[in-house]
Image 1 (cartoon, rainbow, N blue to C red):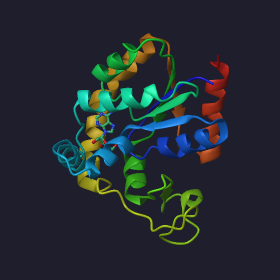
Image 2: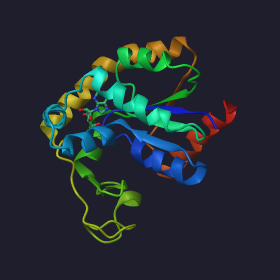
Image 3: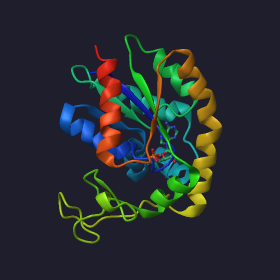
Length: 214
Ligand code: AMP
């Protein structure tokens, strides 16, 4: 299976699709946001800096996230990986390509700002990594506020509010255009429509990785 890079506006569904790909095909799921959230919990100067940046919806520095990603990539020797939320800038894309023997397909989640906002406001997450959505029937938890898998209490991400969303969406638009051009020029970019049910999106992704498989 090919390595995958997911590029998506906030709450576009890349985490949900990554979880399915991990379950079905054994992918390593490397979520830049999760790595940074873990870092933000550490009571260190770096952790506090990252927490502050994330709460405003801004991007952490290219160097911080690139170092975290490189460490995780070293652990993925035998399994393909999904990069969920990395790269987000042209500089990050270039840093990734400077690593030897890296190949991948890039999948872009096409979703409007209105839909992205609605999903962000309805999102609930569990510390086990599973994500739910109150506004999408198939993504609602079976019991309100409780994770179907591990029965823990679901949480709302602190940056899933309207103010932080606007910064995140605008930051995404600003940084994504050059990123899209970069990957289009390398003939690696696939755009998918994410206004569909989870399984149909999954099938679209599988047909991309199958057609381009090793
Ligand atoms: P996500 O979980 O993908 O929505 O990311 C949550 C937040 O983590 C973003 O709003 C940024 O503050 C930060 N973040 C995630 N990925 C990156 C990245 N590749 N570069 C810089 N900041 C990032």
